[in-house]
Structure formats: C-alpha cells, structure tokens
Length: 410
Ligand SMILES: NC(=O)N[C@H]1NC(=O)NC1=O
Image (cartoon, rainbow, N blue to C red):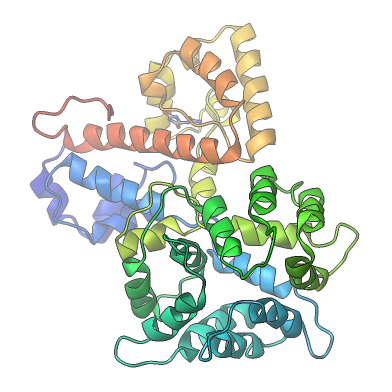
C-alpha cells in the first residue's frame, strides 16, 4: 500500500503503471484523472474516476454521429430537403421578427456530403448573432414566438439544444448561458416534445394526446418507429399532418424507410432524468453512451474463457476467486456460461458485477434477474458495478479514507 503523498508525487507514467487497471484494461481512465491531483483521499480519486466514466460518450466519435446520421439521411434532390423542413418551421407562429431566418440560414448552410453535419450544426450556432452575450437574443425571439401555456416550451428546446454535439471550441458558452437559464423539468423528453408540439398553433381539436400516445408507444430500440410513426401521422389533424408528413416523407426510403433515422434522431436526445443545471453536467448528461459500453466490454466474463486460460489481470483473478468462481461445479459453470452468452446476445456487452461484493449463488441469480432489464438499465447498472470494482481496487492501493469502511457501499 502507498500513501496519498506518494500518489500525489507520481508522474504520469508512474500513475498509469499503478492505477492503469483500476478500471479494467483502461489506463485511459487513469490518464484522464492524473491531472486532477493532488487527491485528498481514496474517495477523491474514486469520484474523479466515476466522473470520467460518466462522461464517456456512446461511440468513440461521440454524439455527432447521431445528429449526422439524421442529417445525412435527408434526401438530396438538387434542392435538398430544406424546403420541407422549412415548411415545418414555417408552421410555427409568426410575430413579425420570428426566428425562421436563423433556422433557415442553418438549413441553407447544410453542405451536401459526408463531411457535412457537424459543421452545419456549428454553422448554425455560429450564425446566431453575437452581441457580447451572443445567441440568447435570437433564441429568445424564437422562444417568444412560441405560444405560452404557463410553463411554456423552453424545456423541450433545451432538450433539443442539449442533444447537439459538442466540439470543444464551439459556441458552448453562449448556448450554455442560454441553457443554464432554462427551467428544468425532470419529466423530460416525452413531455417536453409534446409541450413543443402542443405549442404549435392550432385551431380545433389538436394533437396533444395522439402525440403523447405516439411518444409513449415508442419501443426502445431498432425495431421501433415505423408503425408508431404511421399511427402518429394517421392520428394527427390535417393541419399538422401535412407539414410533419412532408418532412417525414422527405426522408429516404430504403424498404424500411425512415425508421432508423427517426429513431436515431430520437435516441440522440439526452436521457438522464437527474440532469443537473450546471453547464458541464448538462453537457455530460447529453452525451450518448457507446463509450460506456466500451468500459463494460473490456471486462472479462466471470469464470469465462480468459479466466480459464489463466490470463486475467491479477485484480480480476483475485475478485473472481473471492466470489467463489474458481470453485464452480461443472453444472454451475455451464449455467454461468449460458447466462453470460444470453446476456451478451441481448445487450452487446458482458455482464459485469462487483464480484467481491457477491458470492457465486448471488451472481447466478442476479444475472438471471438482470437479463430481464432493458439496455439502458443494464448500461447504468453495469457502470455502477464498475465503479464499485474500481473503488475496491483503489482502496487496495491507497487504503480507505478516514472513517470510511473498506467497502463500496453508497
Ligand atoms: N464480468 C465481470 O463482472 N468482471 C469483473 N467483476 C469483477 O469484480 N472483476 C471483474 O473483472
């Protein structure tokens, strides 16, 4: 064991060497937290690692891909799809100044090919007028043009803006300033999307309930939106239908039509109910989550092939031993192998649990139970387990914090 003073004096290489495996096979995590020295105690280090894990994006290339996928999926026919999107935007209420000009500038600025969509989102943001405080005024103009229903539609616009990809240099400060000023309503996407749709001008019966029904009916994954998009469109009153369907009709048709791009778009909306008001957290929470999958994927299966080959890290080997996984009966080994396979087939990443806090019977029954969850739950649960594993590995290196037991209890 080494002292905190020793830890705080380590150079980068020494730090990676000693802490490179506190997140299994992830020296990157150690590298990411090194700059946060000096650490006060093990909890401080653990908090930095956890913050880093929470900030991991969904794909290596981060959330630009969902927005790009969506934008790239728009058809190109010379004039491209701007006109139908504008039709939709034009259906928003107008009060003289309105916000369509800056939105149209954005749409008009869309370049045609592969390189496109990240730059056009930035172009859009860059096109907002700058007056010291920058974009708040034109965004407010836009918001002001929306009809007001007590709470107004700010939260859905912030959800949308939160989902925009982030590029270090970009116009984050003004967007954050704007976003920070927006109220936050835990109920999130479905309600704010409906709030947004509800805010569209209407005369007569309007579409609140059918839009909510549509959103509520969205199943979680790939298979999703075809039938519910049609149901949605079918249920809309003619006014809104025509502009929404013009928009959806403009999406490319490849047999399955626009389901994947619509769901990609919906998937790109941020998804953490607990979101914080600070701009850094808002940014972090809006990241999609492939990076988190990667953290889970580098973990070896419990009692799996790597364990049988004897090539586990010493940390993992000790953890698996402490759970009794080196003493499985043939029947138990077969059960665990089978469950691990089913888990990976369902979620695309391995089952991860903090082995030191479990015994083999609890692992076998817990795995069966977690197989019933959905991917979001498992990504979150798996990552929480990684944090527990990490905490215990950190305690092995630097000892527990004062007054704190050597467990990873919350
Ligand atoms: N798959 C899995 O949970 N592996 C991890 N769990 C643990 O405690 N150590 C590991 O390597």
